[in-house]
Length: 112
Image 1 (cartoon, rainbow, N blue to C red):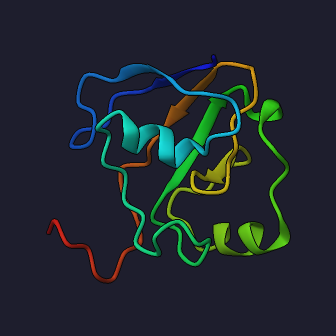
Image 2 (image 1 turned 90 degrees about the vertical axis):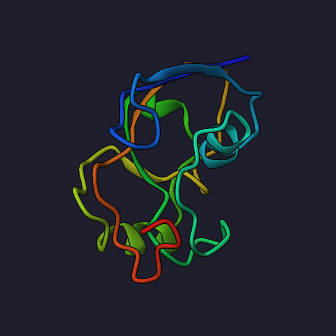
């Protein structure tokens, strides 16, 4: 079962975390299942960018991004070459290191 190292995030995961999740699960579902409350305003339907993560290690092990995801990522805050929408990034057997960006583009954030 792959491990996901989540780098520290000021509000969602201040001390960082190391979690395990089965291959075939999305990064978003893995984070949520481990009490890391990443935003997912579109309910994981690939219609927003609130679950944007930057994959620092293990990027190549994830499924390939589809065109719709790539188009949406163009709108994400802090976009990098290894950015993914965590609701669309499906785990394989390799471990990952992910960073949740400091900001998200969410017009209707429920926690603010």
